[in-house]
Amino acid sequence: AVVSTQSTGIKCAGIDARLNEIGEAIQEVMESYEVELGGKNYQVKCIRNLNGHSIEPYKIHAGKTVPIIKGGEAFEIYGGKTVPGSNNEAIKMEEGEFYAIETFGSTGKGLVHDDVDCSHYMKNFDIGHVPIRINKAKGLLNTINRQFGTLAFCKRWLERAGETKYLLALKHLCDLGIVNDYPPLVDQKGCYTAQMEHTIVLRPTCKEVISRGDDY
Image (tube, rainbow, N blue to C red):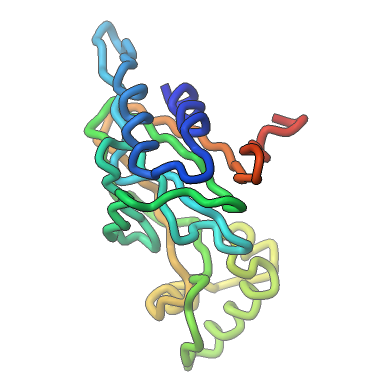
């Protein structure tokens, strides 16, 4: 279901394509699927508070969201917080833009929430200067800037970079809004979820799927 709907999203994408119409097409295809589990049929639902998004240099989640449900209902989950996105009714794709076309399917409620301990983080692209009074946090931020910039990282990579006893410093950076945390997201217990994604660029005469290379 998520593979088919992701292909639908790519098919509908293009210069001047309306984002809300892409979401409607994705939902129609997603909900045409059923999956049998334990002798019981479940309709596959779009996870309505997840979506695709535009991409800019060193800014993975840029300004536009690509909804995956009818009506263009858009939400963004950044830093463990769910905030309303734009309604996307009049927002179109434009030439030269890059997009992550993502589809998320579930046999549960089609609504995810934060769960358990967080391991993935990303520096806030739009953050300005924020005073940091804890020296350990200052040092950790220097490591993040040097190793990852505004791209995502995990705790394991911090340890590979030589950081030790950094958890309180990392929490401090999150509390200041300098770093966003991305905890695991789950639907209702016992259900199955799946995700599919490709990255496209809208060229003047075509749309190119740049993540579908020789190693795909």
